[in-house]
Image 1 (cartoon, one colour):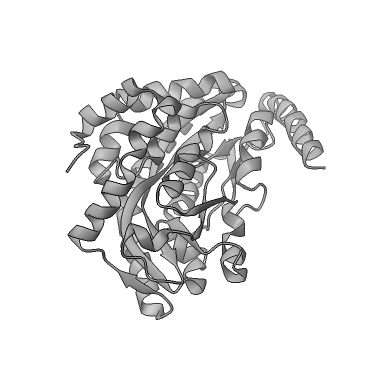
Image 2 (tube, helix red, strand yellow):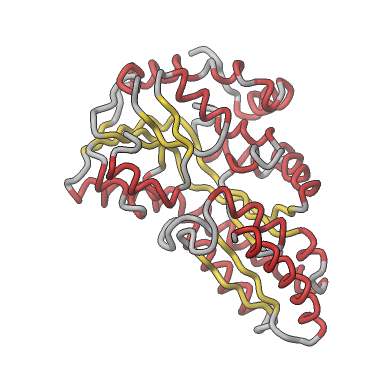
Length: 334
């Protein structure tokens, strides 16, 4: 049934091409899996506003948050088949697509700040990686930050030993799988839309989420403890079906490119602000205890996790890792 709906979407893509010639509004279905009031959700709505205003109604952007159309594993195929035109998946989702170099961004403690992330993603390294997506029928239009991930569970997490034996929800990434196993945890690949219920029923014990997604999904309501380990970064690539994009009138494509550039600036400006707001709201709820690891505890997590960088080097290659190390002045041993 799902396959049929995707094929139907592909047919709709062909028909939409005919609509261009008839001067009907060009419809862009923009699907994503998180809440509308997250940084990603707000940026998607801002892009919609800019695109529709600047094209003077020639383009209509329909935003579908919260996996209304497709879950994590389904949305990429839907884009390739043309059932939707635009997504903003996390970088972890490109490994299963066959561009496993993107899994380098799942490495623990690879970045220490938003500035380091931007230096890589908005420079030659990011451009080179985005170009690889075109062989999959995908065009990358922008990079949106979210935040740094932290461990949550129903038991306090202060040391790497505290994670041992816990069933932790992860995205589908070989690097994230190894990250959890290096701590003695049991990684559980699961769609984001299923996380709340899985936590509530005990199917999984905890998560590695950034504050905005932990808060807006209400997952914090079924997690007693949040430890601000900041062990990994989560960002999104805004992507579009390449055939659809290439078929747009040149002036519309140019206008949408600038709208996306401006929406990306907005997204990255609000990322840290939304993180801080989410943490404050979680704390105010009284449902979750927030713990900040000491420098020694953070160093212990780093010592336990940084060996994943070299252990998983076949996924992304030593040259790419060396390029990022150089760009961020990464120190493997501290």
